[in-house]
Amino acid sequence: MTPVEMSIWVVGLLVGLALLFDFMNGFHDAANSIATVVSTGVLKPQQAVALAAFFNFVAIMVFQLKVAATVGKGTIDPAIVDHVVIFGALVGAIVWNVITWWFGIPSSSSHALIGGLVGAALAKAGPSSLVTSGLVKTIVFIFLSPFMGFILGALLTLLFSWLCFRMSPAYVDRWFRRFQLVSASMYSLGHGGNDAQKTIGIIWLLLMTGGYVSATDSAPPVWVIVSCYIAIGLGTLFGGWRIVKTMGQKLTKLKPFGGFCAETGGAMTLFLAGALGIPVSTTHTITGAIVGVGSAKSMSSVRWGLASSIVWAWIFTIPASAIMAAAAWWVGQHILV
Image (tube, rainbow, N blue to C red; front, top):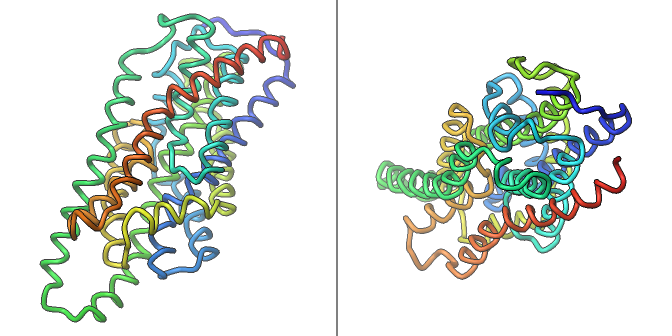
């Protein structure tokens, strides 16, 4: 890879923009980690976001950087990347995140970033700039991660319903309030491990492009890793309540028992994806798990109209953020040269 000449202020601007996206990721996706534990009444919102933010950061000690490598090297051809492409990708993803947050739509920050990279790369170099194998893997998991969350959430609901069949509802509720603290923590750990690495991958790609690190390095600088985990943790700490209501109660009514099953099913999916290095959507995963829990109780307990509108938001995320990124790339051509 031939280094692209860029001034230090441009690098600083883009690193700052990437960390802003990371903060927005935590802010936007905080609902994924805390919606169920807040909506079931196990924790107050302030307690829940503090718990989620802590485990978002702790993930730095648990997960390898496989997702970061996929985002940094396995989505678009690193040879066509320059500071303008990264600027376009980040701006496109941030704008889409703000729009969906404002309307309370639980869309995916992860796929907004993938769409941003695709849009900026297409604007610069056309279809040949895309890494087909990496994109196919990501697109497959757009559908597979909510399906896995759905299946695991439903199976866990059926399993624990059978195990707790002879217990009194009050006894079950009391114990699952405690269990939900563990499941929410594990889901937050998976959220931090998967989502912070996407921004690590972007900054790593930027530093490789500018010649600040070697393309053969097995990992980015430590300051990149630490700053990204801090940014997503802070974003979660200030996370928005708008999406919590959609995720936690509007899709289906949840009690601690159902919240535990949804979070555990979602966490299992995220841990598997992190081990495989696949950048999945935490939003898709927990939504699928919540719907799975509701379906296991009764198909009529799920608000399928709302669920279908969320699916449409998922479908539009990559093309919408790609279009915005292409426009941002054009703007960047005029202000970053």
